[in-house]
Every structure is written in C-alpha cells, then in structure tokens.
Length: 412
Image (cartoon, helix red, strand yellow):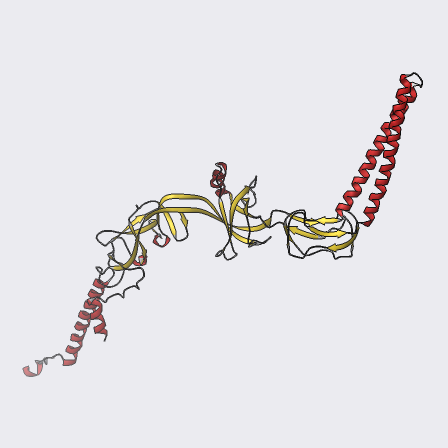
C-alpha cells in the first residue's frame, strides 16, 4: 500500500535544442551591443561634422584677406535718348523739286536736304524790289523839294506851312521805303526757305514725302526726322537711397563715370559721365531720374535702345577684401572660417560692406592677412581640423577609417 501512495517524479533534463536557442539569443544580444558600440564611436565628432575619424582633416581652399579698393557701383535699366530730335518741315508752300539726302545717312548742320520750287518767290522778290525803287525815287524827290522850300523860307518867299507839309511828306516816304525794304527782305527769306537745310548734325531717318509733292508748313509729318546721336544720352532711375552719395560727389565737382552694357549685362557698349539729376523724386516709385552722356563716336548706342547702366558713385580705398565665396550665413549671422596656425578653423562673425563682382569688403571681424576658407566650408565646424589644398587641384578622396573598413568586411 505504501508503495502505491508514494509517487516518484521523473527528472527532466533540458533538450539540446533549447540550449542552442538560448546560446543564439545571447550571441545576438552581444552582437547588437558590439554593433551599437562601434556605431557610436564612428559618429561625427562635435567638431568634425562627418563620418569616420574626427581627427581626419578636411581638405579646404583658403585665401588670405587682402587690402584693396572696392568700387561702389549702382545698377539701373536705362533708355538711350538723343540730345535732340527734329522733324524737318517746310516753312512755306510749294512743289518739292529735289530730295538731296539718302535715308539713314549722317548729315552736318547746314547740309542741303530738299529744294522747293523757288520761282514764285523769285517773282515776288522782283515785284518788291520794283516797288522799293519807285518809293525810293519819290523819297529822293520829296527830300529835294524840302531843301528848296527851306531855302525859300529863309528868303521869306514861301509860307512856313508849305515847308512843314513837305517835311511831313518826306517822313511818309521814309516809312514807305522801310516797308518796301521789309517786303524785299521777306521775299529773299522765302527764297532761302526754298532750300531746306539740316538744322543740326545727326542721322536722317526715312523720308516722309516724295519728290514732286506739294508741301505746306502745316504738314504734320514734315519731310524727314533728324536725330542727333553724337553725343547721345541715357535716361535711367535710381532709388532715392542712392541719391545722397551721388549728390555728394556732384556738389564737390567730381565726375561720375557711367558705363552702358547690353541687355544681357555682359558686353560693355559705351562709357560716359553723369551730367544731370532730376529736380525731384518720383513719389510713386521712390526713384529719381538721371541723365548720362556718351560720345558715341562708333554709333553703338541707338535712340530708344534699352541698356544696363552702371554708375561708379565712389571708391572705397584700402578696404579689407575677401572673396564672396568665403562669406557664410548661419546662427552667428554673417561669418567666415579663419584658418589658425594649428590647422584648425575658427568661426569669426564679420560685418560686410560694399561688394564688387567676386569680392566683398569686410568692415569688422577679421584683419588683413587672415586666411579665410573659400572652398570646402560646407562641412566645417568651429575647431575643425583642415588641410589646405591647391585650388586648382581636385578634392582628395576621403580615406576610410579602421572602423569603416571593419564594417565593410563584416558586411561582406
């Protein structure tokens, strides 16, 4: 009975499969820990900013800050405007008998342009001269009679009233002769107007009337348009904020150079000077109009042409100058990376001034001679190690660190 109540519990031994699973889990945990540890050591250092060894220097290009001049230039869009543009019209009526110019040619002041039939005006001149001769003869006769009357008056042989009347008659003939002389001069002027000449030097445009037509002084289109192009001007507008520096130069008698560039703002077309500033600011745009004058000897500027204008307002002398590629913008504001003697870089906040092309002036923050990073600054941080390289040489490839090499072998 006792043997039946006592139960013997069998001993349970772990199977080999369970042991294998436990060992595999331990290995996985150890492997994950090893991987996380090496990943943490391979992260970019706070001062390096790239994967791999934080002590590996960054290849950069640096250039020392230099002392130089910066041209303060204002840019604007301008329109070429001629000094004068004249529509040549006839001052009298008549048939146009001759066109003496070629369309588009250059003419000088006083050159013959056209001729109107002068015969009617020549006949009018002959009539006026005949009337003048007649009245001059009457004047001479009245003056002779006045002389005789004055002699008789002295001899008390004629009434004083007769002498006075003769004197008045002489004055009348003098007035008539002057009127006749004016008529003669007017007829001569009309004959001169029959020969239409250029009122100024310039380029003639397309003719507005053909030879043989009857023209009058009331014709709206005239005969031809002459445009003065040598010299020529350009009108442009600048913001009112730029006006003080320009007026400062003009009031001291300085000449402000102005250059005109093509529509692409690449090729220089002409060079001249600023000659005039408008008397008031346009309140709708906040700009002021200005005029620059160019010799235009080669005819490169054409009336109503659009050009890009550059006004040299001033020159900043002996400024601290760096390439514009050295300027960085971020949390410190505007800054540059300065290369130290220990081949590390330091962040230097700077205050920039006027710029010109690929160079910019520095008002404060660095000094002349400080080496600033101009290429390769995108991954730099304060105190990063750098290696200077030739700007003409390609960037050196990044060498893999031992940790990176081990990871690659593990992946394989």
